[in-house]
Image 1: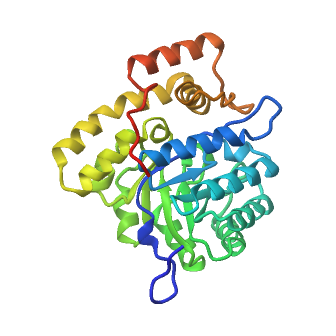
Image 2 (image 1 turned 120 degrees about the horizontal axis):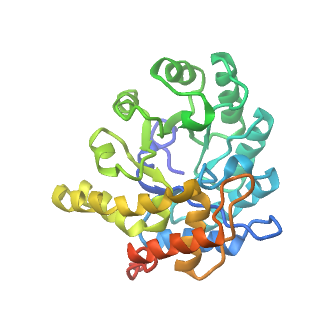
Length: 312
């Protein structure tokens, strides 16, 4: 990780297209390391800048600590010198999240990210203490919050964010997946590196100050999102808008049957020729008939065949 002249982490490297990739798994519950490497290598071949590893589509909160450590190791090894791995370490307990942060740092990940404490409703003090512990365990890596109130029941609003930032100086950014899209501008104005969590609205997010997008559809068709980002950065708004319209079909696939993780694994299994497994229970999963419908829809949408990737 590069640093600036003051010795602080250079956050300018965190920008662009960061797929929230699924976590391939064998039938016995072990991580499918070959499958995970294949997804990361495929996405990097299409120019993504990094990954949001073991997030919600990556089923991070229901991975065992051993599974999570394996994912961090594979992500760190595979992306080294090529892309940035932001490792999600959010867990039901602070102790487990701290272990995940240590493993991410030891594995060569570029940053850690973490949902706030969930299930038990935490007060502000509990949230701050949780993030302080994770930050301390991350050995100086930048910390990204994960604003996902739909699942955590905790929403980062400006007052809460200010309180956490005051006591956790390594909190440098966030993935904003909350419904209030306008907050992207608030986070940018605070100097936070804000990724939009909406694969459906990558272009509007960029115009509001987001540094890029993190979401599951990016892993399925990275070529669409990297071209959109490059077009926006080059000022080619006409092409960026065309691609903004095109990514809708990919998002529509991912949300089928409310089983995003399994949908992504099914499509990537077909596209890459490696069985990525199913959802980790109790996550929603596809029946055989539903999987067939998903793959037929993916074929119709042109998602099962990638364009020839540029040499990297």
